[in-house]
Length: 162
Image (tube, rainbow, N blue to C red; front, side, top):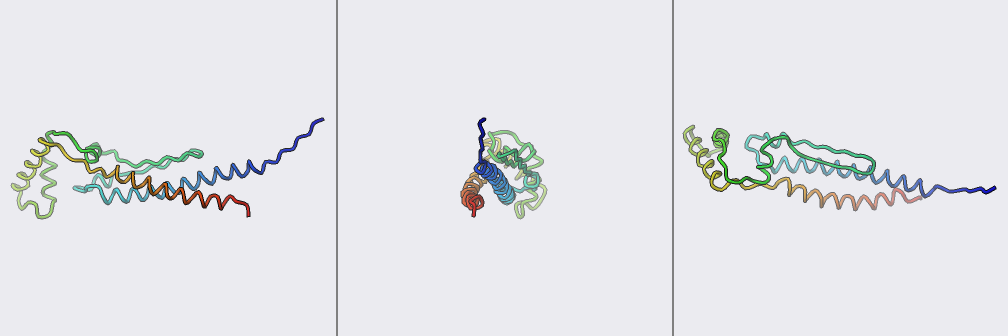
C-alpha cells in the first residue's frame, strides 16, 4: 500500500495572496475612482452644471478582476469631451448661456446677438473638445500604478510569516 502526504502550506499562502491582492486592488481603485470623480467635477465646463451633476461611477469586482468606470448619460458629453465638426447649434441654449455669463451681456438683445455670433462661429469651425476625461484618466492611471506598486510592498509584508 502506498501512502502519500502533501503539505498544503504553500497553497494556503497562494490563496491568501490572491485574496489580499484582490482586496487591495479594489480599495486602491475605489479611492482613485473617488479622486477622479472629484477632479472631473472641478475641471468640466459648467455652463449649467448639468454635466458635472450627471457623472456617475461603477466599481465591479469579480474574483481577482476589478473594473472601474465613470461616465454620464447626457447626449452632449462626447461633444464637450472630443469637440465637434462645424454644425448649426440650436440658438436658445447659447442665448441662455450668454445671459448666465457675468458681465457678458446687459440686455436680452445683447444675449441674442452673442448667441447668434457664437452659433455662427460653431457653424464655421465647430467646437474644440475639453479633453477632461482623457487627462483625468491619464493622471488616474499614473496614480493607480504608484498606489498598486506601494500596495505590492504592503502585501509582501502582510503575507510574510513572522
